[in-house]
Length: 262
Image (cartoon, rainbow, N blue to C red; front, side, top):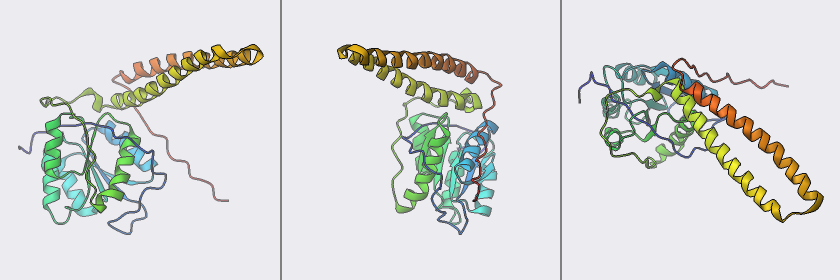
């Protein structure tokens, strides 16, 4: 593997939306676990980094493999979130070097990348990563996986299975690495939930056929109001999809509000 060539990968596990209080640090007496986020794409660092901070982690960032190695040695993070397609020193070689060094070998590594191909994942596992997610994925999935690593990897748990199509890797960066791609993943999740609600509404309407009298009329009136909301949601989802396709879209995560002490 040559050091000057980047490669890249992507995937989503079932996510408990964890982490109003993340697991305690296992590496140091820090008040909050430290996550090293390694990605050369600013949009990805912004979205995933902001969300990890929002859920209670400290986050430091690196933009290439060499910077990641230096930061890992200096700060000893509790978890490393590593892209694969990095400049100068790619993620696969970075993981190998981290695992070969006694100073960093025990740090669990989550690969977060755009390469969904089976060989990319296989190579990352051989290099020593403990978990693998494919972008674009929801930020809460990343936060949940980081939490699982802090809790489970130290206990010797195996990395979760990730399906990946057996295709040949491409060296071309995918558009879904952008903030628009991340927004598209969120919209896709909302759209899927909306379709499920819409299906349930249809089933409820069928069940109403056996209800008579005033009760039926009242229930039908309530259903019609929900249907009006459903149509508005359809328009909103289509608007969000259009925004997600825009090359200029910028995604930010709102800052966490501090609770007021009484």
